[in-house]
Length: 147
Image (cartoon, rainbow, N blue to C red; front, side):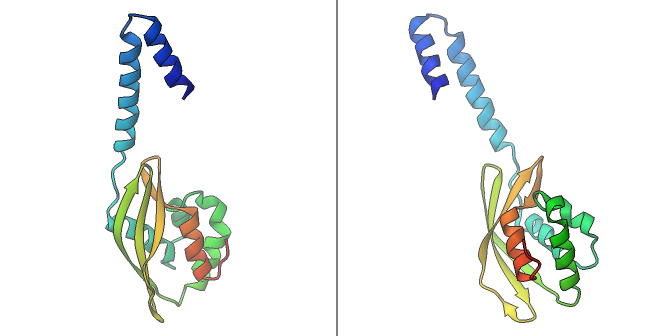
């Protein structure tokens, strides 16, 4: 806010339009950068969840699809062991993107049936959509792997 006040003050005291152009260009560049993040598809987000619950996938592959995955390594190892004989699948719908966060409705299908969809989130980290820590903890909790 101080920068805006400073910019307005500078333009009021000066007849130089260069500062106005620079501020406008800077704002447009910031807006374009946030729009440059490609929205994920439901299939792309589903892929991250499938990696997490696949008991045949090494934990190293699982940490890559999770925000701060290395910090969740012990939990992911426990979940992988717990889910070895417990197949689950997901349905991902209604993907919404705001900035670098995507939210989608996720329904989990397990041997006990299909759970009602709930909102899960992903974060765009260096151009890759990763399951947020909060959503990872939701899944870990279901597998009794803690968070």
